[in-house]
Length: 360
Picture (cartoon, rainbow, N blue to C red):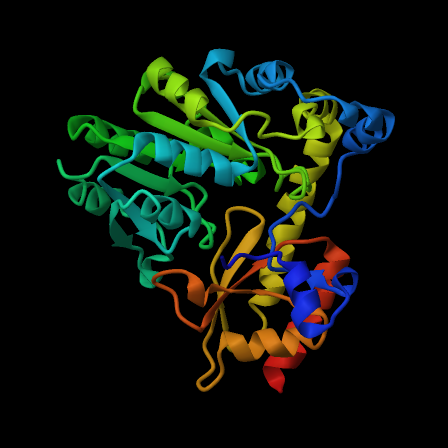
């Protein structure tokens, strides 16, 4: 499994204290753990003596209220990864279509079901944007599952609701399900133009995946949810899922949703200002192609001949900075890497270091 943010492995292999690393490989909100969650954990530590609510009713109620969903359409899991795996294992598709590049766990989940996989190649010259009409032509009667990441990881590109509705119309025609992973959607400005949460009730063949761990800066908590307007499928999912898949404090996260309005506002203010400034500074560095991001991570390509990401990654690691090598993503090579958007002070350190390393 190759993902960003594996500080423990870096600590073991490179003998570098994980706390001294600037981790630009994981796309986590730099505002950190919300104060509400810190207080909640401190005040209720003794609740670990009891099992969590096996139905997570209060959490589902909070999610339904926060996002204007129907509580009976919600299922929760140990991060978005569990929602993805449980959904795919319940559907057990014969043949699926994915984008390339995209998040690797879709393919892992599909292969664990022995599913045949078709990959739609996104083009660099089109900034890795999805051409909806070309994509729809690849969806025929043999496809029974489509999986999309919106915004897509690692390209940081978005698909509009208009485009998604065209895909859903085609998926209905061929009797296929559509899973949309919106794990980073909370970071998006004008979410109503891209998220299908407001429209999910119109489609019984749609599953939307969400995660709290990136936006709220708590990847160690492991908390995600899915939503689907198909009571039969929801029942199958509940029968398949492990009991008590969330820990006690993840089950209490509804209180964070209800309380942290200022945290949400500060996050959007930070990203709106810092993303633009950071991208402009990165574009000043010779030898790089910076792809415009929609959210809190940026795809970059090295243009220098004879120099690649493994070399860059090693040089940056010597400066205690970790980047995400994207050569493990299908349709990307050793010239591509991904970085997070962090606080201004850390981004300034990163930009200065990257500029120095590129000149070596």
